Amino acid sequence: MVTLQFIPYADIEDLSSIGRIRKLLNTVKENKIVLLQGRLKKEEEAELIKVTMEEINKEFKGIELAVIDPANKKELTGLQKLKNSMINMLLGDRHGMTVIGPANVVKSIRKDPNKIELYTKETRATRKKIKRKKRR
Amino acid sequence: MLKFVKKFFKKIWKDLFKSRRTLKLGLYGPPNAGKTTLANKICQDYLGEDLGKVSHLPHETRQIQSKEEISIKNADGKELKINLIDTPGIATKIDFEDFVKKGMSVAKSKRRAREATKGVIESIKWLDEIDTVVLVLDATQDPYSQVNVTIVGNLQARNIPVLIVANKVDLKKAKLKRVQAAFPQYDVIGISAKYAKNIDVFYESLFKLARQK
Image (cartoon, rainbow over all chains, first blue to last red; front, side, top):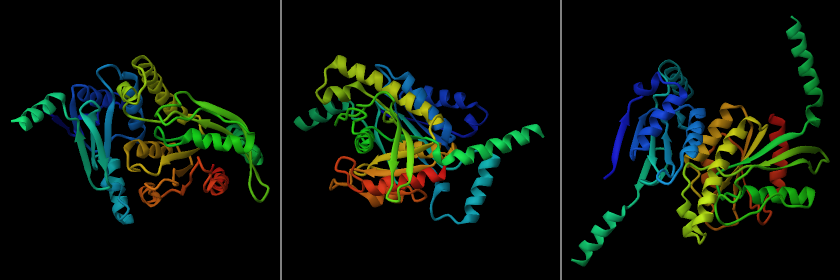
């Protein structure tokens, strides 16, 4: 079973950078896939990778990460871009969505500019069930 | 007032010697994109020696390796001095079992994974030390991966000029146009570091990159 946890931007808005990373990573380490409204700052994304690397061990193999940000679309006009940056300035990076999953659950995330495809790992138990069904 | 005068003279001094300054050039990118192969090509061309070991296994480079004072000359006789810094590939996950699957012993795989995590941390830390970056991507792989986007975003936020190199264009699966479409705001050149394809265009692009700093 895969658990998805939605985190609204309001939940991380008032946290420090390290507080945001901690909150996201703690949730991911509970084997949940996080759907975060909006995105982290660019420096925070790099910091998230750094902290992830520091915490890799037998159980935790790392993360899969993808961000979709419609504000970065090429087709946007200058006025739309200005509007988006004004909204970002006033309300924070609420645009788009960030998906973070534990690497032992999420096999890969494929990202096109407009969509995210998330592939989960087939667990051994599921594989065994499938094999049993086939035999029957 | 004194501060302003000091700053003014410092700027003049800096501008005066800008062209003679040695540029810290970092090779960044995901694992197995060909950073060390490109570093070796540069070092072979201008120093006659390799910089590091290459392998088909990911995370072969697990420590920062560098060569100082490499002097690159272009067709017009202009000279560019660089300190070349080859960084470990940046990844969001490292599983020792992936190395075991490729035939490595469990003990060696665990050690390699542990060193690789440290390498990623080092690469990110070094972003603060670099003047310009060549982002080396594997042209046969998905360019939209978040690691690539995060590296580019961080370089942009730090105001570090970037040249994107789509490596391995000698392979049939390579899709240069897809890489160019993923990063429309940057110069993207297709090369094969292994077979020296388009390497002159790459060297010429380094001069252009240096001017942006």
